Length: 510
Image: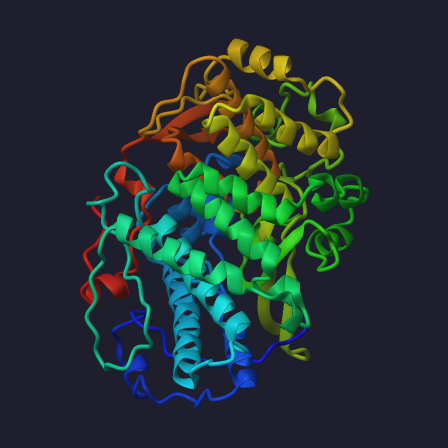
């Protein structure tokens, strides 16, 4: 990855402590040209990712007792849905700070554009990117630290939606509501979408290019339950022949060499990658072929019975073009988000661990559209999208609309000691028994396979009120129930960082 110069702006609401009060918040570089605004927007993307946190919080991990010596306190807090006290690069504190830093950069760029007047519209592409970046930072925050959007969002606590650069030394904020945040997101996204122009990017895949912007909009509107807009936006991304936009899964899975596979998966020339975000994270180590992170892992029982090696209406998983790798340390890995080390002192062998987060891909956007069709009960179009995905992902010819209904109608619901890929759905909206429920189970099953390691399963769990267990697997493979996350458990909203609570924002209930 090429190094990029990051213009650091003090992030509003990151910490209340002295470190951010040493310099006045309005002591900023003057941003007074198109080139400076474009450079500023490089820092409008979060430099930390939620993938480690949300993968460990989801049902993609068990506790493996034979690897007890390799536990990590932060990983244990993620896995146990505890309030996180650690402050490593993947912690809620760092994610919160990274998002608000990115938002601060976007707001500074937007203010500079407003001051310029932009009479000729020449700054419209930068304005569009800034609006999408501001929306994305808030989108990550609201879906991590709040309840998912639902019927009680008018009263559920949100996160501060910041639309202007911070100039006060000790600002005061209110959380507002989840509904307030979603209204702000919709306004920014709808204003920003028509302004996006790819011509000004030397590396479009590291910016909100047009396809990435509409993919973000499709996911946002899916979460917002505006299914017509999901379909419109996803179609803008996918075009008239979606198959030409999907990942070449045969090429992605042709090797088991982690270095080759990591680089293939995040290649900027890969047609499926829409937005790639370089981040500081240990996730490439924890989710990689290493013993680190082995106490809580995606293991063979989960993989073969529920996720990326599980059977489904496509038959068994042997037909998949992209096969995960089962290691001797009993992790099942897929080599998506790699482990990249940046040496700050090569002689001493020290530096920083990075990975690259594929924030939006064509394949996931196709599944957003399929889900929107299914929720509108348009099963012909929903199946058409699922069929395109499966045609590209699997060599199986057995995937049909009938096989979807047959498989999920007959499948038992998951129990912690009798696992299946079918878990009870408890959303606050109605899902018809029969074909609609079967389609939703199928889509969630495929999404779990597709997005494993990318952190999105946790948001599907929240959206559908899926209840999950915490399990321990002994050295003799005895499964013990440790904990249970009900559909109304307040731990579904990650606790705000302690510094933020100490600064005055109300904590999430526990």
